[in-house]
Structures are given as structure tokens and as C-alpha cells.
Image (cartoon, rainbow, N blue to C red; front, side, top):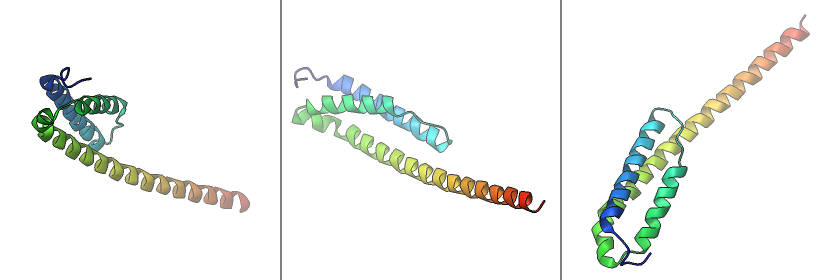
Length: 112
């Protein structure tokens, strides 16, 4: 895509849609729901291709939106890392519970 083909208004609309998608993803993660990131990844990749085609003036024009994108993605990443850590902790607890249950079951069988 050449700078002449670049359409700043369409880029801004696309970027705002991605920001909305990130906000929705953040809400889903906050609610403990599974978030599918493939669509988000594809849309961000498309934005990157468009951003590379911009001239300096166009980049300055969309810089605040790109900064918002970076901030929102960083927030989503932080939240997802926290959720992942919590899931790991819960899984370790389940594993410990399963081990204890098996130990009790084995002890019960051997004392009969």
C-alpha cells in the first residue's frame, strides 16, 4: 500500500473498532470468560501494514490513537497475565486436592 492509497479516515475508523474490541476483550477477561484473540491479532496486523504506508504527517495525525492502542493492549496483557497466574494457582490446588483424595482412598483400601 502506497501513501497515496492510504485513507486516514478509514484507518481511524478501523483503529477505533480495534480499540472497542480490546475494551470488550478486557471486560470478558475481567468477567472470567474465555477471549478469542485471533480476530484482534488479524485486525492489528492489518493496521500495522497500513501504518507502515503512512507518510510523516499521516503518522502524526493518528499518533494519539496508536498510543491508545499500545496502552490498551498493555492493560489487556497485564490482565491476562494475572488471570493466567490465578488459573495456575487454582490448578495446583486441584492437583493437591486430587493427590490428597487418592492418598485417602489408598489408605482406606489398605485399612480394610
